[in-house]
Length: 173
Ligand SMILES: NC(=O)c1ccc[n+]([C@@H]2O[C@H](COP(=O)([O-])OP(=O)(O)OC[C@H]3O[C@@H](n4cnc5c(N)ncnc54)[C@H](OP(=O)(O)O)[C@@H]3O)[C@@H](O)[C@H]2O)c1
Image (cartoon, rainbow, N blue to C red; front, side, top):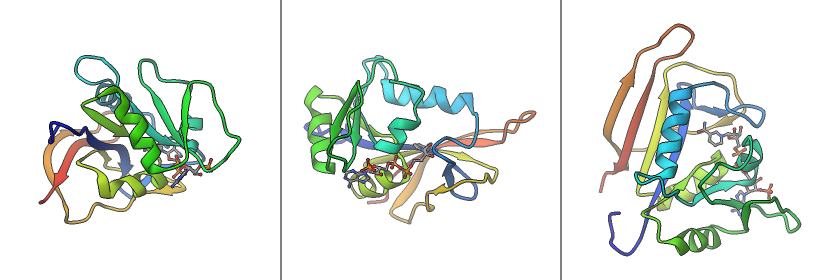
């Protein structure tokens, strides 16, 4: 945490070289190393489970509830309810709910609409940069100069698997 009182808000996503993050409600790739990293970042070092914030479409794209983590889901639908999700209708409500269990970090896990509204509040961004173009219908723009690369771990291509990098961005100021 950068502030003893407040948890860090951390955006987590994987992005192809052409900006694609999703296709027809799903991820366009299978990248087990990225899923393991996602799990580590959302569970936290002690495996306590961090409260994840996501959009309704991303929640519906999951294979089911991800064990050990809270699913705080943004929707504008008044009648939407899904077992295991904590339903909220605004950014403020999502954050207030996420802060109730004193987690050190609040992972924001997509999709593009939700990253866009939380980016101005984010302390850190964890990107899996996939060094290949993919067809898709959901995109993220490159990060602006307010974000600087703090850490990078490169992985070479192997057989069918594309090259990728785990990159941590922090605010320039
Ligand atoms: N590559 C990655 O790391 C990654 C990560 C996550 C998701 N994805 C992909 O991204 C795609 C989904 O992204 P998306 O941008 O289409 O959808 P999304 O951000 O997951 O969800 C959008 C929905 O969130 C709700 N919402 C958005 N803004 C809101 C606000 N201000 N207040 C209340 N509710 C709000 C609305 O739900 P209602 O329509 O119910 O009102 C909206 O339709 C999928 O293909 C998924 O697989 C990729």
